[in-house]
Length: 226
Image (tube, rainbow, N blue to C red; front, side):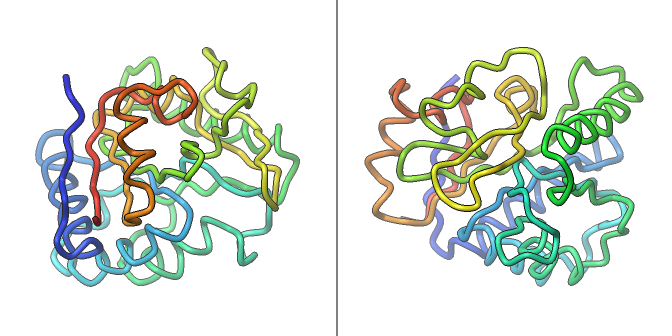
């Protein structure tokens, strides 16, 4: 199976429509759309476009998770939850109970175990070995990292757990992140890359360059804005 590259004309709008269409397909097939949101700067406009375009979307049937979170309070400017809340979660009519927030303000190991348990309880209801996202959105750093899985991190070697504490190279350094076993259990993984400056690292990741953690993600859809 090869990577699928989609070069989008209007990146935010077209990516939003892609996500919503995958959501409708998942709901038609299984009655629920399990979507994992990416953090960082690129997704904000996409999430806002989803809220705007999804007037007729069945938001009550969506379940939201986060592939990583900074260890900060939910109102902190560095919080991935805050970004998603401002752009999507309080704009679209998504029930609060459908949003699984990582509690970045508590002890990192406790937060990771708590999130693992929450995902495991849902997976058990679906008789899954691991929680299976219908669509898991990821960003890509210039160093080839994705989620909070950075080059050289011990987190890259985790083969059993689904959610773990991790450390990043820039502040705030303490993170909580999905592991590759959980990421690769998704039905579809989609990378969101808008910057022309990342063309080279995208090509290297797709070629399987071992320097880049994102190369450990199974073949994925690439939503590209360049």
